[in-house]
Amino acid sequence: MAKKQFGPASKKQEMYVNSNATITVFGGAAGSGKSYMGLMDLLKWVHLPSFRGVVFRRTTPQLKGVGGMWDTAQEMYGELFPKLQVASKDSKITFPSKAQIMMKHMEHVKDKYNIQGWQISEALVDEACQFEEEQIMYIISRLRNTSEKDFNSHLKMTCNPDYDSFLRVWLEKAQYLDKE
Image (cartoon, rainbow, N blue to C red):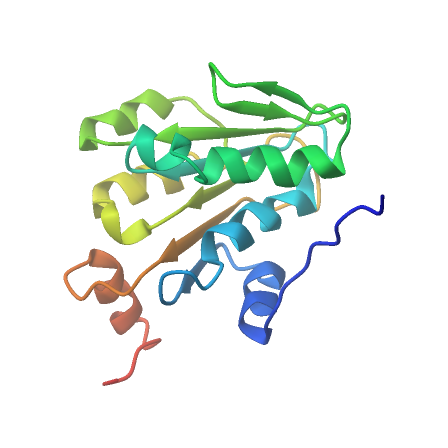
């Protein structure tokens, strides 16, 4: 049986995966593959032993619900890495290189302190519009390159459009949004 091949299905997805900006936002309608692309993007770095990726959602049920990020990650990564170690209690996946990807909720603003002292190589905030700006700023403060030279830490965010989100204000101020 041949292994699945993973890759972007559109130019927009390709731009997201290839972005080397410190902060990248990937928006669009429900069902457009944003979360899937976020998990795929993390694969670029799992050959680096010191890589520490963290996937954030607002609540644990959003991470671990049927067909959610946890299920999708185990299916996607497990097919590619037969010796993958999955610790469901800690929501952590360890790759053969010793790179790790964790799944973490941040339901309350005060939960940001649960990552105090962390050194995150790449953070994926899935559905960033559900987070408070204060939480995102704290995640940014945890982005640190631990030892790999030629690697810059990243924050990748996915979102569905939400006019009332701080993220819209960020994007408007940076002139990434137009009237439509």
